[in-house]
Length: 504
Ligand SMILES: Cc1cc2nc3c(=O)[nH]c(=O)nc-3n(C[C@H](O)[C@H](O)[C@H](O)COP(=O)(O)OP(=O)(O)OC[C@H]3O[C@@H](n4cnc5c(N)ncnc54)[C@H](O)[C@@H]3O)c2cc1C
Image (cartoon, rainbow, N blue to C red; front, top):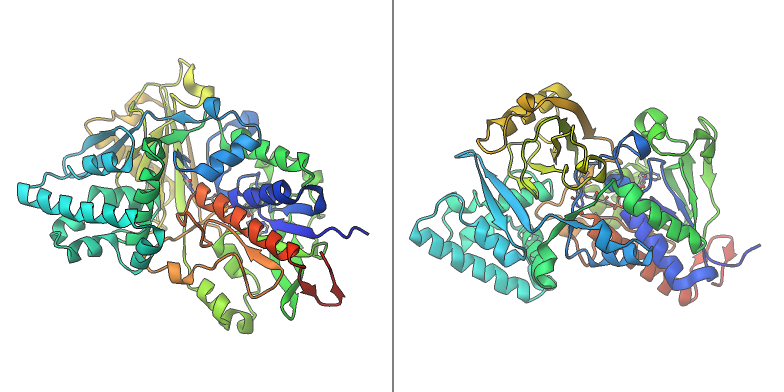
């Protein structure tokens, strides 16, 4: 029997892949790493919406920012050629101003540049402009003092922070940059944590002008990034178990001893999209079992999934650590792609601030290789936004309202007149597809990598980490931090498990 420490990583999204790769990069053949996941293809919420030849839309138009250092590092080590893969949107972004239905273009990279352009909406008097500049300067000085300093502002909305510093409320509540970040982090209206906004600024200006550049990929994320990273993990000896859904923890004392798993329901799990045949499933149809072949676990399931595990165990959920996690909330999102015959919305770069629910739109026609040179396709409009407030709307209502409000702008052109070739809508409402709600005051409840169980570590975009923003970079960073913490524990003698003592 192998005496190597056996590490089970649950989840194959950015955090799980980041954790598995880091473990194997650090410890090589001296450990066994198995990645178990539910079965929608590699990449979790950042996976392709469709896969292979049948398409290649992303699960919401995912963008990579210049400051994603850990993500870009992992891609390079997995052999992905960054130069040919990351397509810069030219430093251009646009904010839609509903009051005059016009687009305001921000050109150039760097947070300072972006913010100085964002402030010009709506028109400000000289006095208002001076106040605005003073408060913004104060914000930037604060970001230079480091993450610990700005993290203290998490309980505050950014707009309240501005008002306390003398900014008139009508400006503070309508800051275009607030709308921009509400869109980016799928936040509820008017509630963007001062910490998360300032942390975004900090990272967007931390590593030079390139930090705020936004990139997209020439094809879907699973094909372009996550599958090559999966192959990299396999080359280092890692194994994957697809189609296994973790439902509950089993534990004795302070150690996790088993993970209850079941074969996921294909109808809710996009089974058919995963690119594997159903025979690859670890479990037979309807089978439930307890998986015990591990010494350590890194759980990277989304926070809504984690909160659903061992739900009836009041003692566990009333304990301090778990009680904090129970206060976290998740947001459902909507993603939609519209393909048109003639060009509409021809701007390079993302548009933010469109009417809810789909506030962000990127025309992917110039970027996706599959469409780029196709003369029969004019535009591939990829929309994304939060579902909150629109739960009662039907798909048709969301589609029609998005198309109507987009077409009402003087600058985009009419989608219907351009000839609609295809519409794909996805409502990300299940526990595994919802996003963590990064709202003001949330930091005090976000767990770190360590749990009260000596052999259970947490990672994911909802777990506190050096980045702390709800994005792929935050998830990968958190996975790497969990792997490092676990290896420190293994190297310092391991952890005592019931019924046996493994000396690692
Ligand atoms: C519509 C949309 C657009 C987005 N746009 C961007 C963007 O432009 N840029 C950006 O950086 N980020 C974006 N994000 C956020 C980004 O997708 C997430 O931050 C990132 O995917 C989180 O990674 P994760 O590994 O923590 O979790 P996930 O990606 O959710 O991965 C979780 C993994 O756990 C598995 N899993 C779940 N439940 C179970 C279970 N019970 N048992 C076993 N396995 C399970 C899943 O199969 C998956 O493999 C967007 C998110 C959405 C929803």
